[in-house]
Image (tube, rainbow, N blue to C red):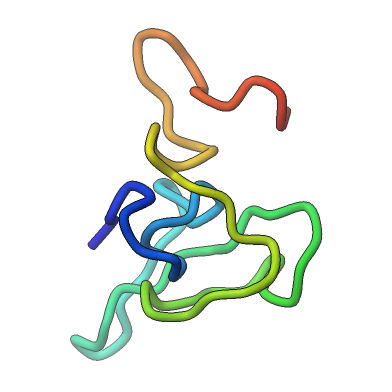
Length: 76
């Protein structure tokens, strides 16, 4: 479950994907880390994981789309 920057794990990080996620065998949700660098880059992580590339996700995930597009234009 996304925490929108309220926690310092992947669930609170803007790089925890909204679009690329999975749950294997009823396990926890894992989402792809979309950070351009960091130890979790390109890997599936749970919301409890964290790394040095963490940035607050108070606006949602970097790949979240809506009527106004990506909330993190500077990262594109």
